[in-house]
Image (tube, rainbow, N blue to C red):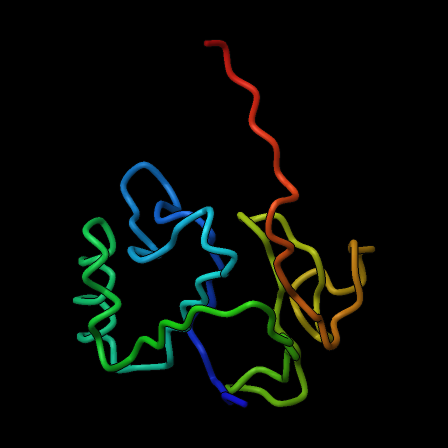
Amino acid sequence: MIDGPFVSIWLHNVPWGAHDTKAAPDADFSDGCLDLIMIKESPKLPLLKLMSELNRGGHVKSPHVSYLKVKAFILQPGPRADDPTKGGIVDVDGEVLARGRGAYKCEEVTLMRYERLLIGIDQGLAALFAPN
């Protein structure tokens, strides 16, 4: 069990999160693992340095980053660190999936409840078709 607070939690099965962001440098689509990158709360200057390393994958060397290869994990969102009466936001690629109590637009309907979420990988469920 790893407790927050976290600045960000990323989950990848490929190295690149964007054309200029090597979020999970050790990720391999075919290894049957998910790469879990957790950026812990940190002072602003080390966080800025860490962010400047994202394009090369060097951010994973920061003491504020934990990088794990996992088959599955449970994400259990908690309250915000700055205000325990409010929850946060769970999003995927910027699309909001769940909002905690007191979060921005928390009264809007979301895709899932803001609670414990089991995330896992099933190797071999993707098929690629390509011409010879």
